[in-house]
Image (cartoon, rainbow, N blue to C red):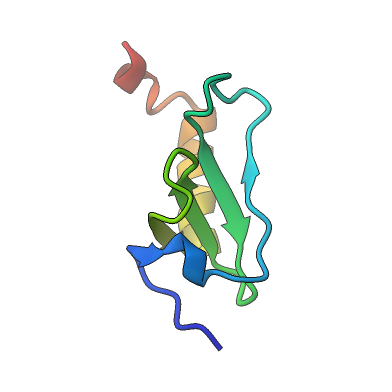
Length: 78
């Protein structure tokens, strides 16, 4: 069993399926997510698939997505 931790090499997360948004940048600069066997969610930069993965709980991702849907982070794109 793999011990998941923030900053771990994404290549150590085996038996997961990485997914990116259909709205991703066409040049491949994307954020990808994967549901881990224990229910946590990993996030990686698709340009560096073997690079570090950040690992979040479902509650942390749910809070982030709720904020994004409410427009709380729109200012970072201005």
